[in-house]
Length: 520
Image 1 (cartoon, rainbow, N blue to C red):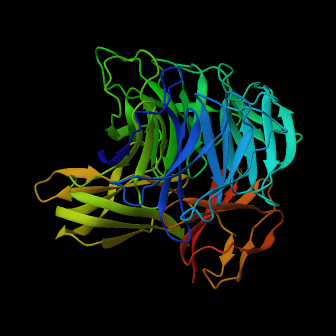
Image 2: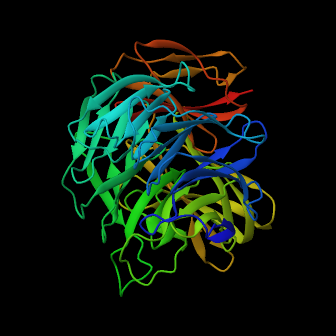
Image 3: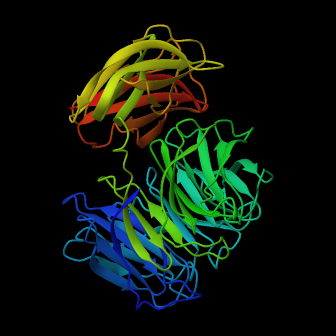
């Protein structure tokens, strides 16, 4: 990875030898300008990083106490900030006019005085407070849908796993990191009476179960144990009655002399997981094959000599529209990074797989190509990948090229696809892996082209509990879920941007139907 820009203030006060902590990102939907939000011992600071080579200080907010730990998340233009020392409560900051100046709206202390982490389930408009002084054995839950400037308390609830250090939430399903008690998964549809869906309390290389992030398809969870020498786990959560670690991976920049690195915080974007590592900086892993995770890049923010202590990178945020990655180092401040694949013969742009009637459609594009002879399409249903077709490449190109392949012989069960790119000299590289399952009969989704405000019709062959509609944008980013109760449905989609979307019908975690829809 390459560093595009950095900011560090050597005059900041230290606490336990640390100056900085968590980081988050924000893109102004009106102007497109991008911002880094970083915690320090005394403040939350905001930087304009639209020009990544020159991060520009915008403003800061003082909580009132010194704290090693700060955390922040946003719901639209509202930012919620907590600290795990002192009596600051929660700072609620309005970012809607950030170019002119963000505004501290309030700093309530009624429900808690300090907390370790905060998480926003944007799909349902909920705010979760973890590790608070007033709820040390569970979570505090707020509703954001009515008035996000003034969150309304829904529940302060004990949980079977006890103290919650961090969590990931999507559509009322919570994946909670309970420290030494392991990982628990809950259904929080009813915030005052959550249901335990599954737990993982014993696993290889277990430690302090610290943080996690869910893949776009919802089938896998990456989680980190904040303990020296523990690997990062890839957990199959598609069957909550049979949670299974399918891969374990790690960064070891100082191996073989030292091998006890610590992963801190993960965030997933598309087929990559970005992880902040104490001592080993920002690490990026390809998770397109969850059973065989591989590292694809890193940037070391800290001059490490061994893995003693907890110096180095604290947080990472890779979700900015520009594709730039921001990270925080406890002593070296803000980093703006780029993950470049310019050295590869093909610069992959997109790779989508979807079903159309009884066929599988593969579509991919490249941004650049160097000596690219052809693409070999490979499929696996069990055992090894086997070639099923070939598409000619562009040779040498500096412009975007799009390709398509139709698989008319979908097999029963899961069909795994990858594309082998082959150079003129016989060298080759692989795309990420995509999965399709043979379409079940009797599902209908129409029209496949929608005007703003037009409803989407869905017909199911039978009523089955746990059926839902999940929609992704063309970049594979999860947009929303809709429960499907009954057989016939008419849905008004949110006011999304015009473009192509992928609609999936899931039945008990299994994708049974998939189609593309175009919003004009």
